Each structure stands twice: as C-alpha cells, then as structure tokens.
Amino acid sequence: MELFDKLKKYFWLFWAGVWEGIGGLPYLENPFISLAVGMALLLISEFFFKGNNPLWGERRDSAPSVLQTIHKNPRKHEFHIKYMDKLRNKELLIGAGKLKAIEKEFLVILDHGGKELFIPIHRVTEVLHKGKTHWKA
Image (cartoon, rainbow, N blue to C red; front, side):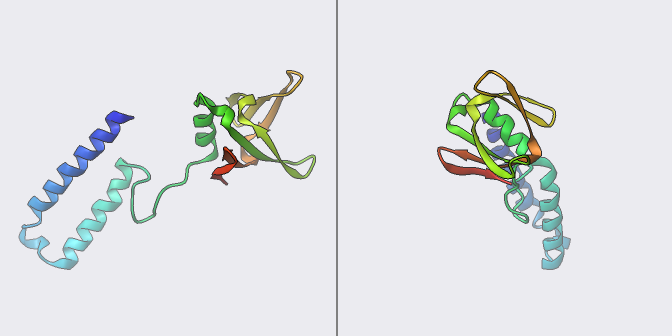
C-alpha cells in the first residue's frame, strides 16, 4: 500500500505540472472553458483513484470490504459486530474474535460449543472498535 501512496503523490505532482503547462494555451484562457475542462478532468480522476473525488466526498466502504479487513486484522478481537437477528427481532453484538471465515454472503462465527453460526452479511448493521463505531450501515 505504501507504494500506491507514493505513486499517488507523484501522479498529483506530475498532474500539477501538466496543468500549469497547458494553462497557458489560448483556448484555456477563457474561464468557462477552463472550468469545464477542469471539472471533466476531476470527474475522470474518479476512475483512477476511487474515493478521492472531492465532488462527492469520501466514499463509504461496503460491509463485505470492512468485514474482510477486520477478518484479516491481527487484532480482530478488539472489534465487535452488531447484526439484526430476525428470530429474536433485536440487534445482537458478537465479538469479531469468534469470526472464523467469510463465505460468499455469510459470516461464519464459532459458537461457545464449537458450532458454526452463519450470519448473512446484509444483516450486519454496525462494526465497533473498542466500543466506538468503526462502520455503520
């Protein structure tokens, strides 16, 4: 990930130089054309760097990506997963340390007796880290 961050920094430095260089072109001296070209390039940048487009703000992560990150985290025992239990009709909290695997659209949780409990990912409502909200649906 560090390599990507370095490349991103150099890309923006490169782009600033390109913009300065083409800024002196005669047809870009018109502020409306310059604004339109700048907005078009900003929209195109969304394809290169997901989540960094200032027009829409920061992109929210989806539940599956957040849960995959937590599952791979060596400190996953610090996380808790809150989900809606349809049978009890209430939200339940379970420690992420019990998360055994993520299979397709289900979380596989090891119960106290070693039984596997399958929780649909779409029922996850919140992820807590040390008691504070880390992600919320």
